[in-house]
Amino acid sequence: MARARARHILVESEETCQQLKDQIEAGSDFAELAQQHSQCPSGKQGGDLGEFGQGQMVPEFDAVVFSDQIGQVHGPVKTQFGYHLLEILSRTP
Image (cartoon, rainbow, N blue to C red; front, side):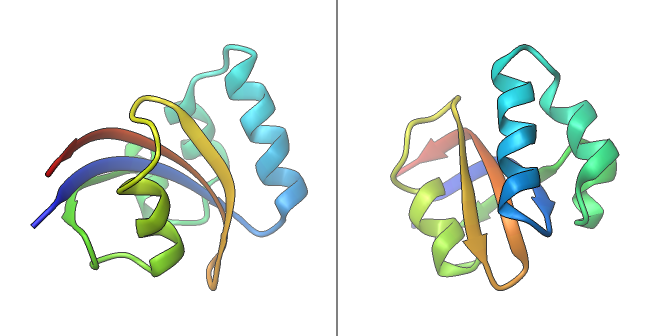
């Protein structure tokens, strides 16, 4: 089973999510922004979700984590929880 390690930032609005992505692309630290803005408890750990298997997260999340480029910030990704920025740290087949 495929496994991945990722971190994310969860916010309520697509606009806020895009603003945070712009800040990261301009050089801001992902972990610091996660600690300041993420509504997920993982924000306290810089958004780190640890390692997880395919199918453990909501489908919209899995679609990005298990197919998009590693080491890049992806999003905004809309789920039932809100809007996410995702950074895929590693993935194994």
